[in-house]
Length: 227
Image (cartoon, rainbow, N blue to C red; front, top):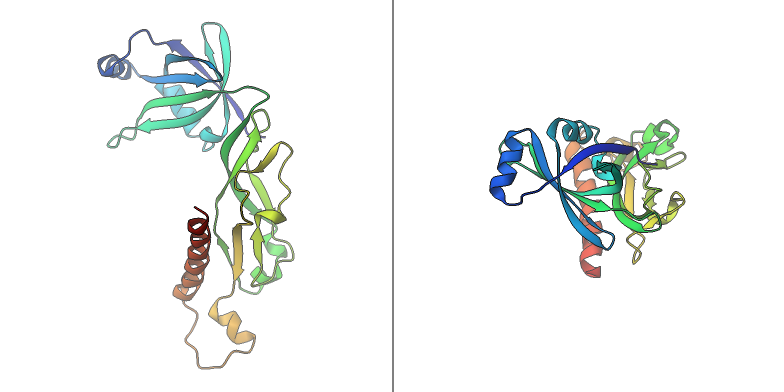
């Protein structure tokens, strides 16, 4: 489950660029709460508190409880605008959440038990094609990450979305193909060990990178054909 974070807010009485600039000079960040068949509410939050949440590394994948005038709104951050020069947050969009609704989120993947992969132990390289999975999740059951176990995987094996057991309340947002998440590729040294003709150059990172590029290009080609 992703973390649930809290953020205090105040109502924004005036709109417009001038009012927003004045708020930023006071250390506040303009924001809006919208969705769930209710009127949008203009608010502003303390920049320091917002920055702390941004620095958690999973702000966009966390439920944010925004407190306003004594009430609390369960929200999901949908967009953060940053100043292109200073990188300060300039505006935030929060989507209201209904407990019974499903939302589209990108959830990071992490790979575990790499020491138990024969292919990796023999020198294979784990090529990650997708670092995040686009999932449809129940708003109260957003996973913080998806663990992928590589135990027993050999060189040449691929991990597809169909091989994963997603957490309860989650499903892949992409349903028209069994897309690749990662592959285990062989560096040149491992190929020679398996009996390829001698006289090849020593292992280069270029060869491994080319294999990775071919994997990614193939995945992008599949997506282009489906679009």
